[in-house]
Image (cartoon, rainbow, N blue to C red; front, top):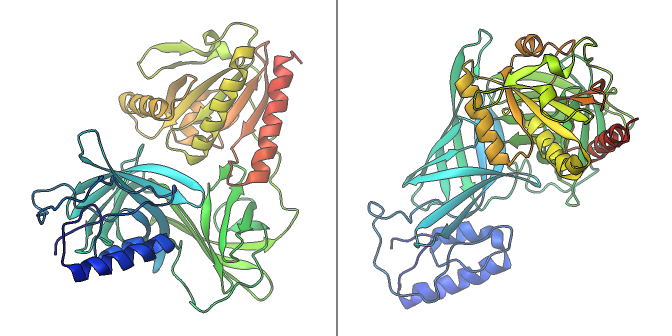
Length: 472
């Protein structure tokens, strides 16, 4: 029998009874839907809202056996998957994604791909050239090229990305990739018989082998006692939403966005410290040591970067993505408070900051607040930089202007901007009062993956904006 999760022809009565049993089990436990389809492909039934199913016809007309050479319906099963990217040192960057199937107005198949990091959902794209599939990720050149197995419930192939080496030369990495359908775990079991014990401590001081200064980790154990969400914060930002497990004293956390991938793998020692390795895909690895500390906190991020007193907005002119020169003083009427947002379209902390600043624009634009972004990008060519910014503004529906300021290298950015003592972090946000004076500079951005710290940041921003609007 030839079939897939997206279609069904009339099989013998014995197989029909088997299908009915499979579907009943699938409704009772949706997580086995993909595995059940492996034995007996059938028309999918209604699924939970979190994993919407494919188009379902009103009737089930008899259909011919389909040939994968002349049909576009064949593809990996829709549902939740667990993928693994093999890193050096026999480490696996594990992550979850969802494949969704529907049909367009002409009844042609449409596949939707979503990356999942705990509660975080990131859209991606999926191209099917059965049995080959290609995953691509907006705003990056990274991709996954894989082949589906005969049951359409497993994938194998490569994750391909480029990263500059120490000499500034782009190096292409090709890492083995595998994935299994109907596997909602973040990481594979260490011990199937393990039962939850004490949850991991919620707050830690973290010291890395190469990064300077201490960092702060914030973890939250879910009610099942094993799954963990959290992030690691530094004076330049945070790692975004990490998701993973704490099992048998071993902590494994990961985040995969398509263009980047982070993995923490640590073991709890007898003295209560956590010792392990941090990896950023294949191009960077370093050790870390963490100690539980309920009072751990970052330094005041308003005190680390300074604006040069002799530089005003009228001294800063950059081009928009259409190539026209724009002076920062001309972007808003005199007497308007402003935020100058130093960022990059490649930066995940900037993605969180852009979302928040877009909310601030909606909240305060009518009261006179203006926001301008200054983007520092990876390419050397202005045309490529401008295209990155244009695509970013359209994709994220950014409501405020973003100008093209230069390259992302912090030294080059410091010289191109000429207004800060040093560009230490992307993003960095300057607060400019109605008189045109820079009254504060905030380095870095802690996003919603650290809820308490993020709420504190929002409160600090709101207080300063309200004060500027009041002319104080």
